[in-house]
View (cartoon, rainbow, N blue to C red):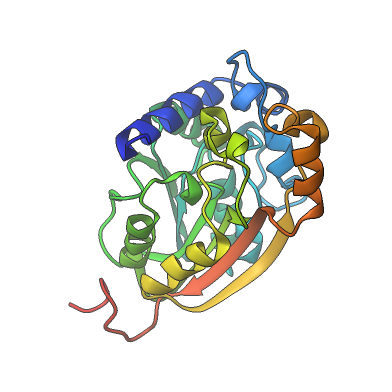
Amino acid sequence: MKTSEQQKEIVKEKYGQIAEQSKAQNESSCCGATCGCSTVDYAVMADDYAALQGYVAEADLGLGCGLPTEFAGIKAGDTVVDLGSGAGNDAFVARAIAGETGKIIGIDFTEKMIGKARVNAGKLGFTNVEFRQGDIENMPLAAEVADVVVSNCVLNLVPDKQKAFAETFRILKKGGHFSVSDIVLTGELPQGLQQSAEMYAGCVSGAIQKHEYMSIIEKAGFTNITIQKEKRIVLPAEILKDYLTAEEATVFNASDQGIFSITVYAEKPASCCAPGCCA
């Protein structure tokens, strides 16, 4: 069993490698980074951003599992925080909606990702988009700064999800909300998939049960919790064969258990006394 710090170092190392590659390289190589093995292709998880206003191809590394900004209800002038902002993809889409009067803050754990995002923002001349290096379990932000929080296939990689959602609650203004796309499980994932470090960095082995994920959000104090979109992740046979026998793969594909992408919406009450809400 790896410690939280060991898990974080795995993620930091893998995403540091990913930051140095193009989207095409990430989608065609192991773990989204060259490492001489076979694992889940990010293209299996990712949704297509190309039609969204504000899309910047250079900032799209193909790492997401949804389109949270599409569902986030961002308004002109909003302050939006993007958790696990990567090269800036969701931040730039959010900026297109929030406009010149809005403010976008991206937070990422990996220094190389922050560097890449800042370069992309500089090329675009954006003055109301900033990127900060930090841990989602302890965000480098004051309380109640965000109108909206978005995140795309990142919170499942955080070892302490309770802290992550507690921090999300803390940084949201009263009456604010989040829209988060993430990977969850239903039923028990076969051991071969669970135990791969590469799969962990590829968003699968870091995932938890759907009911547990939703419970953590509720316990953090959020209300009006809604699943905005849900889809099953269908893993190709050439991927499953590296982790399961042919018989195990057949049983797995025929069952209700599996890997799902969900986009979840929830609100911080406008008036409340939940943890982190009252002075």
